[in-house]
Every structure is written in C-alpha cells, then in structure tokens.
Length: 548
Image (cartoon, rainbow, N blue to C red):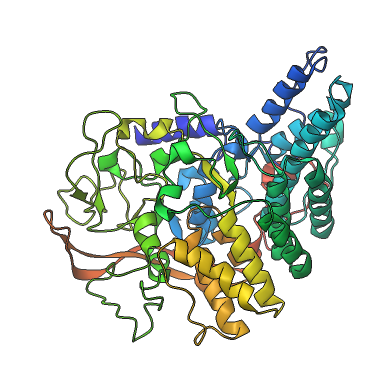
C-alpha cells in the first residue's frame, strides 16, 4: 500500500521516474499549438505562468523541478540525511552505488528549458509595453539559467540549447563544456537583472533583480570568482532584504511566506490539487501521517554547536553525551525532531493545536514511530521538523500551502562572508555577516579570539552553512565544490542511540549503541552524476561521465 501511494505522488511530481526524454532537450508533446496565444498581454502572462509551472523556481505544481520535494530530498545525497526507500530515487546517489541504469532523479529539467525557449522564441509577437515585455523576458531568462545551473552542478558538461529543436536535431546533440555553460548562466543573469523588479513586494513569487543577483553570486562562489561574488552580494544587500526575526517561524508561517528574507521560493496553494506542497507529507513519521522518507543522521545533529557557541567536540563546551540535545544551538530543535523532543499532535479540530505536548519516541517498540517497525518510521530515530512544526491537521500534510525556499537573504550574508574569507579579505564585515545569521537564531556572536585566521573562519562558515540551510538543498553542492564529500560520505551512517523516552517528561535515557543505517562509499567519479544510459542510447554523441 505504501509503495502504491508513493508511486502515485511521484507520478504527480514527475521527479524520480526515469524517462527517455529527460536529459536531452526535446519539445514536449503538449507544447502550445494555439496560433492566437501571443495576441495580448494576458496571453503572454498565461504563457509565462506555463514556464513557471514547468520549472524549478516558483508556482510549484508538482511538475518537474518546481516541486519542493527535490529541494529537501537533495540532502539525502549528502552527509545530512538518509533516504530509506530506494525506489524514491536518491538512496543510490547517497551511498555511492548509483550507475547509468539506476534512473534519473533529475527528471524533466529539459522540459522546463524547452518551455523557456518556446516563450523566448515567441514573446516578441505580443503587442504590449516594452517595459513589461522586457520584464517577462528577464524572468524567463533567469528560470532557464537556473535550470542550467542545476544541470551543470549535477552532470558537468551538458547540452546547451537556447532555441527550439526538431526531434531530429535533439538526437544529435553534444555536451557543452562546463566552463561554457557557467559563462552562459552568468551572462544571462547579468542581462536579466536590470529589467527585473528590484524586490518582490507583491507576494506573488515572481523573479526579481534580487533573485538574479543572488543566484549569480551563488554561481560565482561555487566557481571561486570571489571578487564578482562579493560585488553581487553587496548589490543584493542594498535592495531592502532583511532576516526574518524568528528562524523557527521562517519555515512554518504560510501567511508570511513572502517576507523580507525570501528572495526566491517555490510557491504553493493549500488545496487537494497538485498545486499544494506534498513535500511535507514525506517528512513526518507514522503517527503524524507521514512516511519518514528523509531521515536526518547523527552527523548532522553533531554539527550543531552548544548554545554558548562552542562545538560539542570542545571539552569546555559543556556538552553532556548522556543528555545530548540539551543547551544546543536553537536551530537543532527547529530543524530536527529527536527522541524526547516535544511536538503537538492533531487536536481533532482543523487548524487548532492540541493543548498538551507529546514527546517524540522512536525507540519504544510499542510506539507507532518505532524506528525498526518498517511502518513509515525513521530508521535513524530522527525526522525533519523544519517546515512541519506547526501542522495541526496531519490529514492535510500533502495539501499544505507552505512555500519552499530556493534563495533567502541568509545565504547572501554567508556567501559574502565566505567569499571574503576565501579571498583573504577578512575584516569586520565578515564577522558582521555571520553574526547576523547566528544572532537571529539565538546564538552568540563569533568569538574573534578563536576564529581569527582564514583556516578557522573557513571551518566556521562552512559549518554555519550546514546548520543554517539543512534540508534546503544546498549541502550537496557545498560538499561538491569544497571537494570534501570523499571525507564525509564514506563509512557507516549512524542515527540516534537506542534508549527510552519518558512519556511524561520527554527525558531521553541512552541505553545502547547508535543505530546503523547503511555503509557508504564515495569515489571521485561521484562528484558528478552518471548520464542515464537511456539518453546515451538515444543520442550516441552524448558521452558518459568518467568512471561510469
């Protein structure tokens, strides 16, 4: 029954199934055919909505990379999480066993690119103001650039297609060198930025200048172009963005979804249709109506500092291994539901929380969340709390209107800090950037007597990114660009230690060893994903990535 349900939701999301027309750019069979489509501005707006609906940035309707499922699931191919169900498409990428026949977790990106190319090839036909037309074109150029950013990160060299192709042309493509794809992405974002609205005050999720500059800074950070990265970060900082006051509420307030911190996000509507955010349904455990598909691991839990700003490995931190979740960085409790953590059960009244607190107990064999039951429970003993902590009606887990963040202002701050650290431009602004992020979460400012060298600050900002952006789809890209996956993605993956949870107080008493999830291997080839064999069979000009 579980597998059938998952296959149904994955068929809706179009994320994890293998398809012969995913990797190469082929015009979809349902492409626009109405010759009158471009006769008015409202037609152009409808076509623009179609671009958003089929791509990965906003208006997520479960179509391709627009679905927020992808953002969260990507942590499962990093050292943050474990994907317990192989047929969801990510487990093999995480444990290093992926091969060209495994499937393609990146399905349908090129369908979105084709929609962008279709729009750009036809928009000039529309009678409308030059300013509005330029803005629409800029939005689509951003979306196309974002698609290529994702493809380039995952595969390296990819076919760079900027025009509509015939079926015959799509079968003789070659892979464009990665450096040229990056050059295209950066030039598109630079060209789009001036024609975009500076910041999104309407709350409709449309792409803005801030999004273009922030994505450009991200790409520049990833490619070690620190000078331009800093310039673009500074430009974003002048556009009026600010951190949302509460880290916890940032990921659970539907009414504040488009607040001053959000630069780009996947937009959802709360209803039973495919326009709702189904990602929330895969996160919680059995007792909450979820599937525990994305399971946080011990390595991530250990990365959260003590609330005094010291890592748990520091003998002076005050860390107590018998009470491991006490006095930790508040982002731990906001992000992960751990044994003994308080949570609210459904009250039976839609929209209202229960009056009493329950405590998460994945360690009791009689619990509906027992880690070893195999009944939609987490084998790590941890589940994702981020995004789901205010859901009172668990029957609507798959119908949430909560948006999924693609880019937010905290990333810009930490990107600016990292670029300055890596270029050895360490000044007060580096500490100011990091302190803004830490202080908002309830953490103390950086201890400058400890973190006062490039090496120590590098360690700090890298860990800060990990805990700040857990389950926001950035961790794998960080490991990839730092080339550290070979260090952290090898060996046994552990979960929580076995023990007992007091049902009245939530006290967690450790009695046994850590739960073992899987053994991972990582080879240099795994920094890029394999090209699906089905694509190579279709186009003999497409060559496989090295090692596969």
